[in-house]
Length: 381
Image (tube, rainbow, N blue to C red; front, side):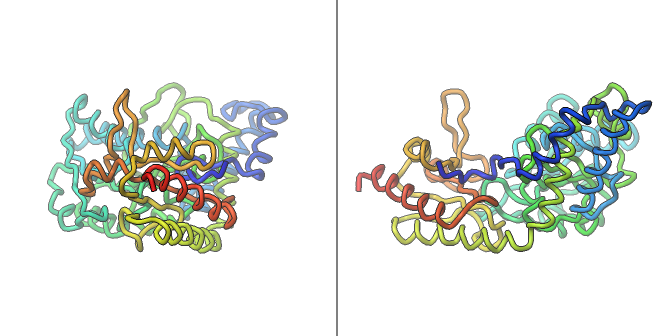
């Protein structure tokens, strides 16, 4: 099978696995055990990983908090900032965007329904762009935080994060950024972007599942959401996943090495795939901004098919994903694509193809052939 769903997850790199393995067996200590060698070794592995992650982000190691994944990091950022503000400032207004990841949108809805937050959900244009003037106009005296993702997980659109940061600084509000699909794919330096908190995950950058991190700018008010021991400088309690954290650190180090050359290589492969599909099939369109996107992602509307049918036809040959999500027995159109004013019928005919470090030209050519044949069959051509 040709795997082209790297936005969903990536394989663990061999170098990452090799770095992790000793912490399952020989160096199995608890990093919180401060009285013996086993604990010291584990703690040393964690701190080395913290330095590696900080090196990738150009920040201080103390600004990195390890979590169980990006979803937890997002929850910690949004709910933790809201709780801290409720104690001191009374600010309850949050601004986010309709095309954010569900981890952000669901956290915001929880804060609305359970904790009394007021949330403004900004719309986007047909390419997925936010209106910066609309964002600035939405900020109120009681606005606490703005949450805008760096790279959209479905379309690959790169948001104007630096400009958002400037607006937030001007108005004295916090800026949280979901950078899950940006870290390791584009340069991400929070201090240069005006970001106060930034979340990302190991398994999107060839690290293990079940571990992520939250960058928290020094002196940013935040209440922990997991209590029980005061780990991670009282930001996130719980026994640290030492092998996973070591893996994240190694993956961050590799990302820093691969980033410059890998972007150009993958972009050429993506363009090769899109060109062939659009040349050999009628009515294939790129969803979103074809120019302002990361190299790895191609979100395509393929007219006169149902994406789920195409995925089923390809399921044992090519792994891609639909621009829709299954909820119970219903197939729903992607909230990202519908927010971009795409009709539901077109959203349900859209697929996301995402490339990765192992992707080769030969795989791209084989995948294109499989996709073309399957689409023609589904169209009855």
